[in-house]
Image (tube, rainbow, N blue to C red; front, side, top):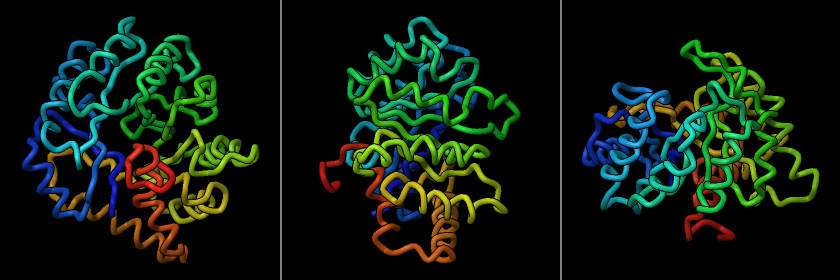
Length: 273
């Protein structure tokens, strides 16, 4: 089984096209993020985010066995916690995507959203690290997410291994290990979606496996729908090539491509759920 735990919607896709792309790519389950980077959707426009969450719910309707919807809210909006509650009431919405830009993960406005997510039992996928579109990444350093530990029932994933602060991301994830927490139950997970440029990827992934282990790492293509299945498959094949070079064992490959995300999503077939 392959779980793509980081797949963007644009608002222009339809369910048949999404499922066709996943089938072509060999992806069994996908985490779909509500649109916020394509017009008319914008993190600055609260109403557009609410509309994007509704679009995502309609897209997923009837396919909740394969498609898991993550709403998007902006903590800078005073109504963000309420918007999350609204989104969580929509069919198929079972998680949250947050992008720190203009706010820090330790800000009070962020904690209000965390409190709502914790109460609703929603996992969170955070952007972490540099933005490739030129926005400032100063809000997204991995150590800033230690504020999440004030909400111990939250299950979070930091995307992109926090590049270029990958060592810092490893340190954040290692804290639970140092304190004897089973890695499968760690509060923090890390996706290996696009972040480190190609020249860094092998060494970054090697360190992540050595420090964190496979049960805290998960696959995400970070592709934008609509797109051909081959585009998603290229991300899978790139990871497979890296794993070959790193001589990663089959059990650890399964964790990366499936097991870690299954536990994050609380899928009933995941070990220990």
